[in-house]
Amino acid sequence: MDKYQKGLDGFIELFLLIKDKKTLLLLLDLFLTAEERADLGMRFLIIKELLSEEKTQRQVAKELNVSIAKITRGSNELKRTNRKLLTYLKKNI
Image 1 (tube, rainbow, N blue to C red):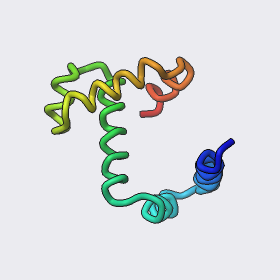
Image 2: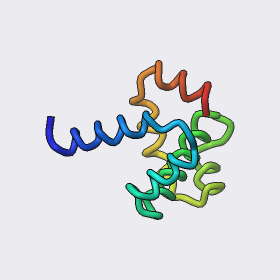
Image 3: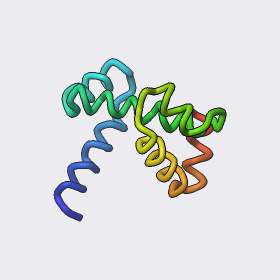
Image 4: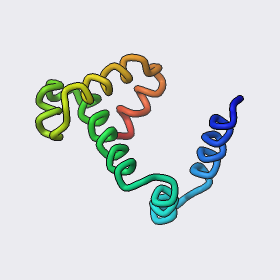
């Protein structure tokens, strides 16, 4: 395991210990830039829209004011995601 993977594993372990939203937001403020937090929020919205299957990719891109390439990347990642995670996401997003 390389050092960056060890760091990611440590971050995930820390993340899992947090039980309240306020502390979680503070942690994200510490580890992510404002732009990275915005990108994470946008990626969440893209995945949420794609999972709902109510709009075309072009409609989602227009509504979220992002490029169709970002929507396509999200769509491609969902295609590679295992069924168990997809089921979880559809239930919880």
